[in-house]
Length: 77
Image (cartoon, rainbow, N blue to C red; front, side):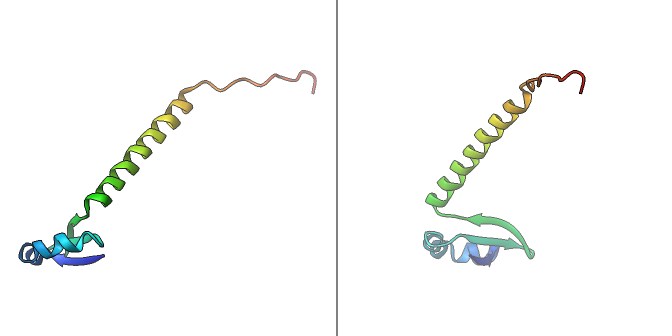
């Protein structure tokens, strides 16, 4: 992943559009990460992963809300 400043990103925007087809680009402002540029394919994969995580989280939370079955008690032991 390459890193460029926001000024560099403005000046090299067309070139960065080509670059993100191969690898994501980090854009910094005042030394801190301000944004990422990714290809449409990478973005679709990220969105799919987020949806999958959301679905798994919902299923897990539903599982946790179900009452636990009681086990039979043993008397005299």
